[in-house]
Image (tube, rainbow, N blue to C red; front, side):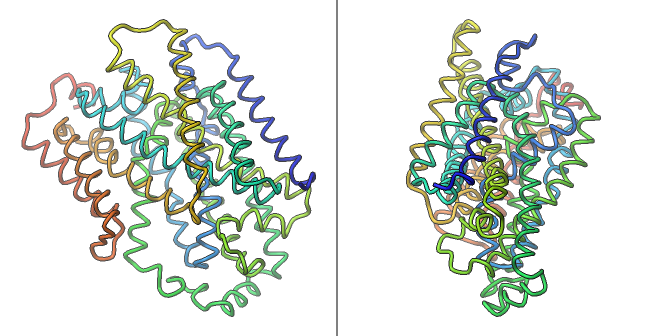
Length: 483
């Protein structure tokens, strides 16, 4: 093990745990549930922006995305820039409406919002089960990314790196809750940005500049410098699918949407949109461009997902590499902690307290149950991550699509179309989940499109038809949602 590389990472992990412990000791006047699952709705603009970016920029963005760019070339960099408006879209479409309504009904989770809008326990049950299944898959991706990073950098075995990474994330999330998640996200977002800038500068210097590296990429494979990529892989249908999957459809991701419930005021939201969009653009370009250029410096990688840590070890001095390897570590940790706390909230609050529990337990019992569920979920994900696939980006995109197919229309049309009702929501969720699963399973691609595109079209149609064929929502619901 290289101490110059390992020590900064261990210090970083220790710092995140310490921050979580400190934040976990802070008492809130709003009670455990408000504090643990939503941070007492206290996020300012900078923290909101960084937690939105950090939550979205996951192992897929910092490990899997650059790995895909390493294999596909500059065309994948262009494709990745589709993701730039994600913060603007999520906060712009959901932000203000979500925040106002959430405060009126004291909503702490996305399922609270669905219950308030549709007044139907089956909607909440299906949403909760869908969220848990997809979150387990995406959290597995994050654990694999963290373990591979530690494996590449420290010389630990994959299993040892997995245990170290999982232990650190579980500890600060268990102790600190949502407040620890968003504050550590802000710190991690800054580290991600610094790490990306330093790495890209190092790659360009080591390769003799962008022009020289483009020439070498073309010599390896002319497709690496073409917009369509090698063998025309990046077709128009693929790009349209990717735009829906990682940009437009991100509005339907629950772990991003829940941030719309937790910011302090409108000023914080507007600042969050501006800062988050700028930081997201810099991160997406820097990470993927470095991954594509990495094909010149380390052309013989057998596992593309290792390109980012390998490049850091190749182009940076050991101590600097160890310091900024915290960037990809931050990307991974900042996503999994958000999903872990949201999954725990779904099980404890949405499914157990709201629908299964006959009498409300004591606050101390709720606190113990919340932390126990968080721990058990983490251990399940840890077990599932013991046998990783070669490229994690495909597993992550599959889970992204599943969440969008289930949540997109019930969230968006539920806010902006007064006629939508529980029948429409149920029809949309079932149609989206079933069509997405069948299309993926059988490899069916109408017009060459990814399964998410026809699935969203069918689920949107099901929402409209189901709502129009049944009675409208009650007057109370229409009044609550501004109609």
